[in-house]
Length: 202
Ligand SMILES: [Fe+2]
Ligand SMILES: [Fe+2]
Image (cartoon, rainbow, N blue to C red; front, side, top):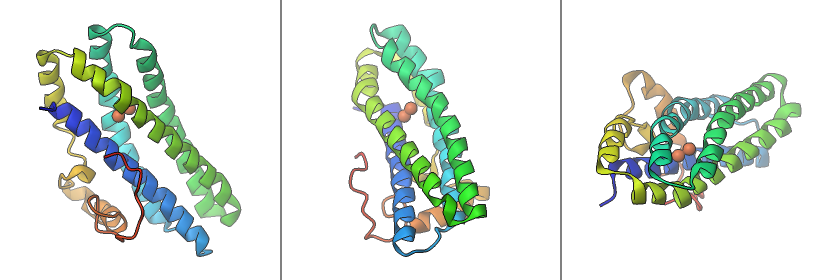
C-alpha cells in the first residue's frame, strides 16, 4: 500500500503540472486569436501556485521530507541539495514571473514576449523538478523511511487540502477557485474538454 504522503505529493504534482500547462495553453490561445489573455485568470492561477504548491508543498518537502531522507539514506544529499536550491529559486522565479505579468498587463503587447519567456522558463523548471522528485526522491523515501517517519509525515501532509486535489476550498477562496475550475479540464475543473493536457504526470 502506498503511504498517504506519497499519494498526496503525487496528486499535488499533478495539480501543479495541470495549472502550469493550462497557463501555457491560455497564453498560446490568446496569442493565436490576436487577443490579450484573461489577466485576472492568469493572476488567479499564479496566486494558487504561490499559496499552495510554493507555501505548502515545497515547504513541507524541504522542511520535513528531505531532512528525514538525509538522515536515513546515504548518497542522496546531492539531489536533495539541488531540489532544496530549486525550491528557493522557484520562489524568486515566481516573483519575477508575476512582475513580467504585471508589465504585460500595464504596458501592453510590447511586454508579451518577456512574460511568455518567463512563463516557459518557469513551467520547464518545475516540470523537470517534479520529474526528479518522482523518479529519484519518492522511490528512495519508500525504500528508506521508517514507519515512525511516515506516521509524522502523513499527519502533516494530510492537512494540506489543496483544492485542486479534490478538497473543497476554504470559503474565502471559493470565488478564486470558481474561476480556476471553470478554466481547467476535468478532473481538475469544469473547463473545455478539448484542452490538451497530455504529458500531465499520472
Ligand atoms: Fe519540490
Ligand atoms: Fe514536490
